Length: 276
Ligand SMILES: Nc1ncnc2c1ncn2[C@@H]1O[C@H](COP(=O)(O)OP(=O)(O)O)[C@@H](O)[C@H]1O
Ligand SMILES: [Mg+2]
Image (cartoon, rainbow, N blue to C red; front, side):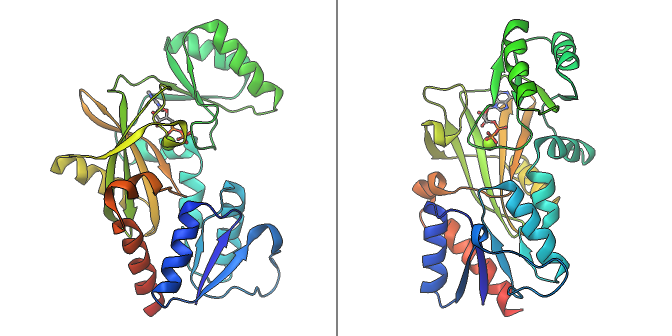
């Protein structure tokens, strides 16, 4: 039996549940919003668990508690913890000698403004935990920095993740890694926005990467436990830089060019896990 934890059923979840059932894998569906967990005793989940919550916090807590109950969770607590937080991810990538954009962390509004002035503009401010490009802001001068950082201050967030703007073509690379293997890799082109998130519009094509580029993406994947993750990369004149790892990867866009390959890779991964 596979347990499948969700807090919302989007395209990916719908496809996954259907495919698991169609291929004879019984699925125990658990809505994290309606299922408390016992921290000091047994839980009703004791098998391999696929966690697909939109909420990073729910994924983090679910994976920690279930791992403490000796349940194999995909992704692992460690993956959710690092990949679900851009500050930890950047630091972890750098520690492991993976090229990533120059980034600073500031812990007060005033220091964030001083740091931005030192870094120079344009720069990119991001909430450490988030997706779909939300609040990811291209800051072109100190006036705009003041506005954005005041907003961060107002919501009582005292972490300021400040990244050099990377000169790149109007596209980025999204790789989908399943069980440490490259399942799909696409270019994502931006439309209206400077950001290339598909949720902001834009289109997808198969990416044509050389062996070194593929090897880099696999090396990044191997820094995380076997699971289902996404890696976002940008093309620079000095090669690829990795700017994000996604612990709840969306693959609707990539499936438009890869068909069923991604979902088949994921289902096979779980089938093998359940058979072992
Ligand atoms: N340092 C950067 N330089 C240029 N563009 C960037 C940079 N960081 C992010 N972007 C653009 O913004 C998009 C969203 O940023 P990302 O870090 O992936 O956050 P999210 O979690 O919201 O997807 C990226 O896909 C890319 O198009
Ligand atoms: Mg991203």
